[in-house]
Length: 193
Image (cartoon, rainbow, N blue to C red; front, side):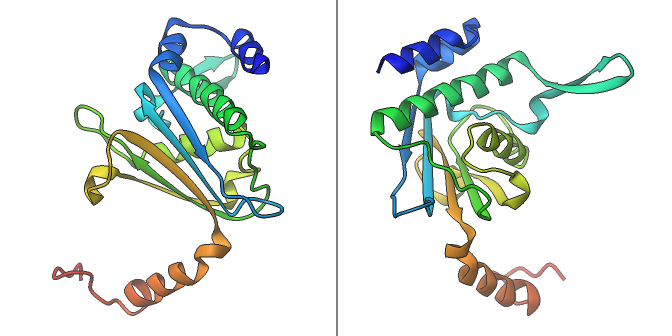
């Protein structure tokens, strides 16, 4: 437990970061076999229901180059996510899970947030974060999508990131693609043709 306090002490402590850590939770579920994990679920609750999105970046000039930086609030969210994820893995007594170079499917179910918002801006930020915390080595080997939990009548009191080895889903994805994309079969009543 002392290593958690050290990690917290070493991180920048903006007021936003402190509030996010105090008002958020993280739970990590990682059924293990030998070797790399096959499935990992990370749930954020409280203030971290709202994950950063790719739109939370801003360009600024640094000499001749344009540099992309996170807004202060988005940076604080990423730092709080890292701290809470590390804390949750330690409390669960599991090693920080890593898929390494394994191709993965990442599904993000976004919990409730006020106002109108787009879910399609979240995957890039989440994939970058998963690289930073070493869950994946390279997001070019990740297939990632996000959706609102409310669209599927799922609990909206948390945001869930599920990472699954793509090899476990290959047959389901192939079947979906062959059924609805290759053959042009309609889903529901409406046709897009």
